[in-house]
Image 1 (tube, rainbow, N blue to C red):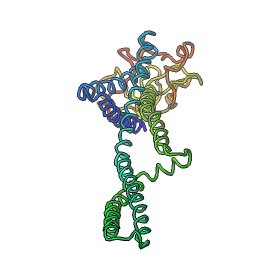
Image 2: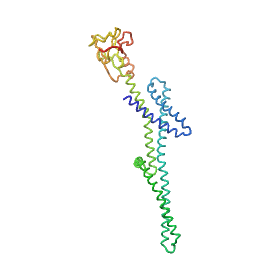
Image 3: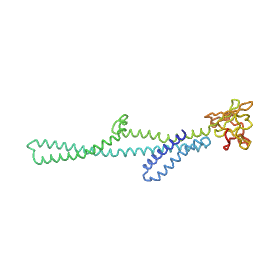
Image 4: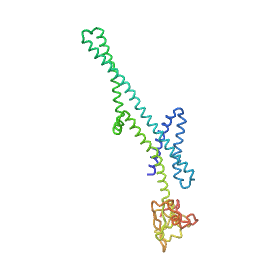
Length: 321
């Protein structure tokens, strides 16, 4: 799960960074590549800073962690603005053809209406014997040809408009649910972009911090040493060491390794007895030394010096029981 958290954070950060870089570069087209390099370095620095802050929050100076925290928040806002610019540009590009097509259709519709009115007027004059003439007939034929040409031009534009309407159909339905008027689609698109912007980059940063939390817990999880039902020490999972003089009996003798200074003890062994008082090692997931107060830490400090020369140590070259 830890690796999946980090993977999700990296994927989200990478995609959000890409959108942000392209969006910022589109805003400052006069310096495209410098903006790309600047935005890329800021994205990388933001993730490193967020991870470093979590790891060193307790030991970092107040002014330093305050400035770094403000910097991370501002960088998240910059990234979000870049994402907004990228998505807004994509929407504008997708609707640009639609707007051009609509203007052309409106122009042709106007021409068609004028030609139809003119044709009706000419036909009405042709019915009157006093105004009928060959010139009027030629004008009627010319107007009819104009209407035919207008209809030929409108046909492909109508097909293209239907296609564009189908492309913006989903957002159009969303817009109709919440907004009214000609600008309903644009308003709906802004709401969707704002929602994506508020979730995209902040989620990536928080997932990175969550991954650090999980990794830190895994590193600090250990086993506690219990004597007379009281915790007398704690050791990490990968290093279980007990002084040799406290071990008086084992189910089986350890493997001889040519030295009597240390005895190898497998981590899987859960109970070691001492006469008359029992001493045992118990696996308790979720015990973390860094989360205890000072009084509890003193109780959890190991009773024995595990770094001593004759300490009970687990060796990699030892055999099994």
